[in-house]
Length: 175
Ligand SMILES: Cc1cc2nc3c(=O)[nH]c(=O)nc-3n(C[C@H](O)[C@H](O)[C@H](O)COP(=O)(O)O)c2cc1C
Image (tube, rainbow, N blue to C red; front, side, top):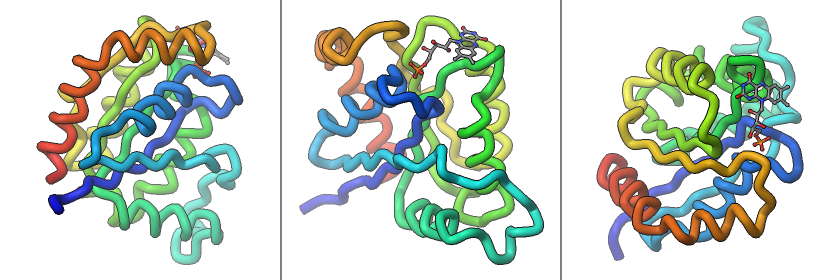
């Protein structure tokens, strides 16, 4: 059996019906056999980053660092909040910066909206800074804002060709 790429996915929105989270859920459900996408569900439970805690991070952060060490790539889908990066996901990235786990990790982003150019610009700047392997050119986005779960899955199902091309490019980079 060939390699299976392990991807840890993070949504920048913690609300229950988040379009970004549903986008990631769809991707995890319809990923090809050579990719396994796990969605990290505890972004909102992470404590505020404190550089004083970096030598001995809180347990929840230790567990997340283990998961990041264990995965081949990180995938982020994030909404724009006030022309910027939502606090929860920025807090998570802050925690990762002093840790060696992130430097060479492959990172990809997708986006669940036709809006949010400021967010994308800022997120790309941040991810370029924290990782040597942020693949910003491998990117897909769909206009899912204000859509419900059924509508989102229908739109994404209609765009499987593009989504499969994205999966192929991701696998090529991490394998
Ligand atoms: C606090 C807050 C601030 C927002 N600020 C912006 C913004 O500056 N620009 C924008 O295009 N949309 C903004 N939005 C809209 C969200 O980006 C949009 O609704 C997005 O689809 C929400 O993603 P979600 O469904 O994953 O939660 C904001 C929403 C919230 C809740």
